[in-house]
Length: 371
Image (cartoon, rainbow, N blue to C red):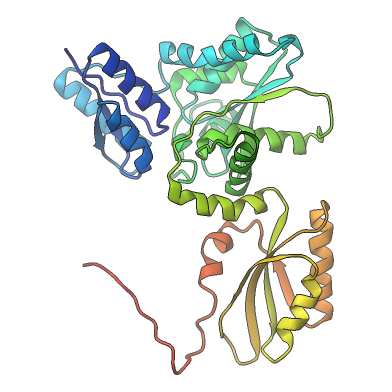
């Protein structure tokens, strides 16, 4: 008997190895970053594997895994940087072409990219065995675009940091073998933001009543972005997005629901400065009405001007024009508005920190900490 030490943070590879070890009666130890969602850790543990949490990200966990494998003479099963693992992930491409009638008419397949195993495997099968005319497009986040940067520079690039939302693809450097294959066969990379991923999670839920994790919905978000960028909505093009993970902690759903409408372009978030006097709120509401207000944040801030964050449903599909017209209407009423729908800092932090420049006699500010 011997142990296998795979490292990963996507959840699927760890669960696959743990299940294989269980069936073959081979003890497995899985090394994951400390910030791995609890649902992934629990699922791997339930399959009988030992879980070691180490490091703050995938790459730190990988170093610890290599150390353990060398120290104890164990077999290391990488999550993506291995020809056999890539071939296994490439069978997804085979299944897609087998399951879709008239596969020769399939225009493209979209896959998430973390370390690059899935994208390289699907590319290899589709281009070499299937239909080379079918495009294979990888999808990354704006704050986790190691593959796109590597392809652009012709060599693997190491990111200084990676955004944590799509934790299943949060890799600082892609695998050497996946990069070699993707450089030759991948047709391109599309990048998306957090809101677009949340909108894709909502799309999957509404269509199938299934809940994906952020990395699992990454390909669909990229497909939607690709269609928008290339003005293909309503065309007869046929695409497939690979949904590749459902390891979602329940408590993350609130954040996803909050950001999905922004990702779909159905909602706008504005920062508005209005006169701090009676009637200003009513005047502001009159400009927004009859649109449904979904969020209104105000706190006493300044004796002359009030700062308000508000979000509301858009009433048309022409987002830019509608928001521009609203901002013009606000200006006519002596109000200064800014569209902060695409400002990640404002959406994640500033909207919850509004106010605070003027002392209010009956207000107390507390800070809780742990030594």
